[in-house]
Length: 276
Length: 310
Image (cartoon, rainbow over all chains, first blue to last red; front, side, top):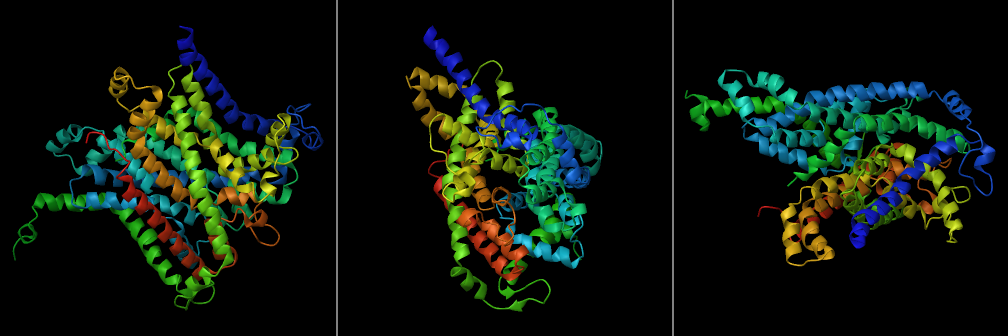
């Protein structure tokens, strides 16, 4: 009995708690550091807890760099990308999983193939195209791609669509509904949870993207939060308390989003398991 | 003239679906042609030119490729990248799997643990890299504080070229909850009868893991391995931040260029040195390497990947 208890309760919980510490402690350290004075940060021997909570580090970080402006710039890009993906990705997924046409298999194969294509191969010509169009230093290069549907989201939605029974749209077809009407009135509503996952991932993708804004946005007033934070690191690298405050500010929206949208994050994991 | 249907051997219905399918897929098809196919071939063209964005591209033939072959930075970046691909990727894959096995324990509060384990994966790389820069600070960082407390050596991490890549691996492990989630979903799909049957046959836990769990997960292992390798060849942000961004000299490779990865070198040649032709050649070599690795993996995988129901 005790051996079984050890194996089924004590061992799992011990492991889980140990690993939880590894996963959680950096957050605790981040927040504590952001609330210390610079003297405390460089105290020898180092201390974990701040003596008092110095919230003014957050005020200082927000005053040194226009973080609200960066947040706004980021938000605009995120929203446009979400709109684009929600328009394009389900249409394409519908085409390859629901419409019986010769191209559907070919398109799906190419969609998968592009997922393993290193984006650096397209990066330079794309930059040149955008430069010729005069789009450098605008948000267009960072958002336009979303309106054509990203392979990963097309794949994700296709996986969901495979699970939607065909009978659902057959009846409407017999009644003479057009393919587009079936798509809008029957399929899209059933796809809602999957679309929420796509929206969430698009948001996370745009919010955390660093290389894109780094390459395309030169003007500091147009920077997104990632490039802004990096600029802050370059200029104020020694002020760790402010740097950690700024990092906390940047991480908060993602953490909130995660807590409210957990079930959608979890869905992405299961979408892959049908991958064969 | 005969009707279209007769000429092609397609029925009207088939044509109807053809146009519909094409219409529905058109956003992606247009994007694919404009943002993938066209750039793909023009990057091949640019790789055979000298191009600085301001003057028209000049044909130089294979010069860029020849130059790359004798470029020290290229070899440095390849070495660093291969290290990440063949050391870091297997480590993080194994750790994802171990975490997934843990998250599959049938105990109370498991959802709470899942939340905690996945949380680091949603933190923007820029923010987590900054956090780890501080965690790995040789004098005041949490990691060395801990190592000193238990009497272990305390390396200078990001300042010591021998430890910069291990630093990156450590940071990667912290974010391995994302991979774990995919493994977890797969684990939950393994038919329970297999384990029960094995138990009846007297197989111990270790046997069950190697004979049932691993084969059942093998398609997902292959998928994560390929995605991980491709990801390793594109490491950029982590290195950029951990190496302290652009230094005064304009170099972004960290101490002794130990964090100069393939994508970092490519970025520097293209967007800092404005050598677009040279960088395009680098991109094509990257493409060939990634394709080769993927093909070898897919070919050899036939021996160890098991698809259910066969």
